[in-house]
Length: 317
Length: 322
Image (cartoon, rainbow over all chains, first blue to last red; front, side, top):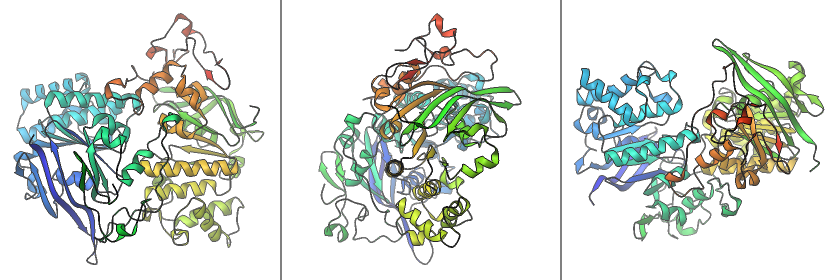
């Protein structure tokens, strides 16, 4: 299987003054196959959003490559990319549809905007395309003339999805698409996303805090910690048998309703290390890690293969 | 159990006056919290969880009006107290942790001073002693390097840290009742676990009664003794956490559990809840506000709601429970 997205040694460092650099994304390498759903998890500040903005080409990388079906996208400036033909191939569904929709655009305008810009459609063909998208995402056509404040959370989420798939992207990046929704609405939206993926043959990069949702939706999971991928693997295996201590802490922190299923609680002490000029010889997790042996502060563990399709960056995995 | 409730809410009804009519947000809501007990209020947005808390705290929006009910706390009815008496007790006897610590904290005041303000206001410390007391509070909520952190402004701290500051402020005067309104929304799961452990430990240490408002059923189940399920301004079911998960009796509780990811093996097994909340402005609201969405509806459902007791501390408000 050829990968749809091939990320190699991608890095983004922000200058924070006094010649100090914040390593937001640090030499990250991974692929996403065609039709695959990859989950990206990690705590706030770990670089998920920066990574997503790099892939989505809203931000220019410091180094590394972003190849979409063989085409190198990293060389192109983010500004130029907006008008590039490849723009339509990567689209994004933003976190809170209420905040990301233009309040002065009707639902129809919001969905039509990317089609108008990237497909140069107008008039009757544009209108019928917008209606078809509303049908696909389960948004009643009579709601197309409404403004975001006249729509419910679930309806806004549908508009956000409709506008993202409007230009038939190959890769859809979903940034916590259901975080603002009630559980009953969340179910409907997750099922819609699953169905659209099959119908349109898209690949998903699914960013979420909710590990229970990631477990249900994703084929493979990437765990990020302070700019590095510390573990990756098939979702079912990773959840059943996490190898990196950070992944273990993440999974043991998932609220578990059934007391019999609660595994030993693993709580992280301490504060994360600073992402500003991090010591290249110290494991990023050192200080919070329950293991934390001398070797961890002398040698940065690299991401290595520990089992078929499973990679872990820990000396002791 | 013969424990004396720290807080007993009885027959609480709240209405909001809006341009498009009167919204009956809460309708005869009742539940109690014992000393040292943690009770969760769960339900979807619009179920009335937060309004219940605001009414008890006496901080309802001016458009909202309590039309009936009592909130008995330490022998007094909080809903009948004057604003002056309430202000005296609020922060000392009962306090609240809000959803978003960054917006709830004063952005231009050092966090240590914000803790000291509460202590001084309620006689927990004198002004000269307050800074040291603030450091003590930061230690209690396990903020590393507390001597330095009292000098920080909220923007200099992470979300988890800010939430710990909120907890420190809320617990500064050792209240008998704490209301935590979605205290971990927006925090990472690892931070959420640490914060929830902390609230639990502090509540346990001081015998504090805690009301925990959340839409996350799994979180409620893991950290609370009892769960009160709300739907459209009604308490539909109340039961010990373990019992509610093992044997939910109200059709809405069953649906809510079935929609919560976590237990299920696949997305296909998750089921959404049909329909939506009824329009609470309707003059002809049915007796059971869930009946329009309910698959177990029977003829009796038009009658006033029953409060059926199903064994110890398990109450369901339904004519045809499971």
